[in-house]
Length: 415
Image (cartoon, rainbow, N blue to C red):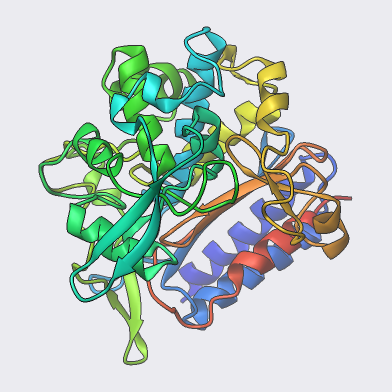
């Protein structure tokens, strides 16, 4: 018992001393943030989490709490690896813009210029539930690369789509919606997707979609490299993101956090459904989902976000021009998202004036997103502060409020 008390005391002292070494941060409020996360796990809202805060490139807070696997009582570690799902999208978008900087294409080029199967897109017209047959009509314009980056292409998202008809059409066509342990390639899935009808005219609405999967295949075509290899050589290696991969090595696999679900008043391992939780450490390891396939750590993803806050550079490695980042961080969808406090750029959600007035989500231009398995991040370029909170759950959960609380409290750390 004495040993436990000593460890707790050391943690509090080191946390206080460390936070004091970061200018602009209030140490006492870091303790309150830690207490909130401790209570989140203690009360069973989530089985475990890793949270990280950086200010001006310095670590203010980085802690792991709870279990990485409830059944075996394996504790969470700061270097635990999480399936980051849709957080993959920003990385894929970054790769696209790196190739754009090389003059490989224009943002308003039709994707059919590179993937001919997308020529002459069709829009869903009528659907018969009894046999899943449908009719379609020609779209008035082609899908562009910009449309794919901004979720305005009209493509859907299969099993997580908001339209039941699209779910059925995608399932029947054999589209891979998230990731898979099956022997499938991104090119095979994208070519099937190209034959299916769209929700709406390209550019007319914002519909969350598999557009970044299409762009993963597009990167292969334009670069002449396998998608996973391109990301490793051009982004992960330069930034030192050594634990960010589509598939894990034998050394990395033990650090993968279990996907949990809350059932019968307890957390348990999530079963195989439309995806296999054994991904990314099992299976054929041939599918590189540009929209949802990567796994990573808080430290790795923090490096990626810091590169953006630094104007495209980290540790002497320049990935993007600051002018390109200006374009990425500019609202690209007009008022298609409504008036909920958010715009959307070429890689991230963006806080607008309405969001600033709402409070607790950052300065104007704060960029963010999250992942299907309860991972979230945000980065405020005005305050030069980053917050990441990674969990690994699926389903309705157990009243987890740590996402909004963490973000709101991170901004109260600033003097």
